[in-house]
Image (tube, rainbow, N blue to C red; front, top):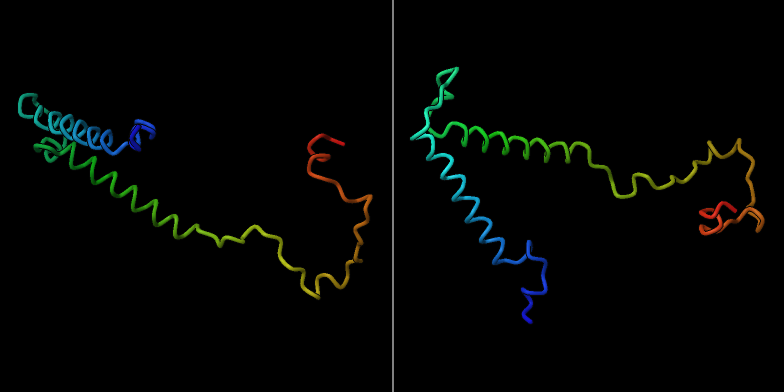
Length: 114
């Protein structure tokens, strides 16, 4: 058995190459079909040859770039949701509670509802 046959069929390099070739051929045929099939343009420019393919590609490119930008804007540090250390001012008015053995509960007990 080769290493490639152990992989899932969608992640094999030979399958990925075949999918790229097949998809490219289908897309080229769809664009070339516009030479035979009349496309009525409502705005003039949308009747140009290959307009749908270019418009779709540019739209997809814009969506990817906006998603990347949103990722940079919305990204938080890795420890964003970790509990913060209590400050001395905030903790001064709270009484400290000691954790005794009766307060400790295991994850398994909590999940079982004990």
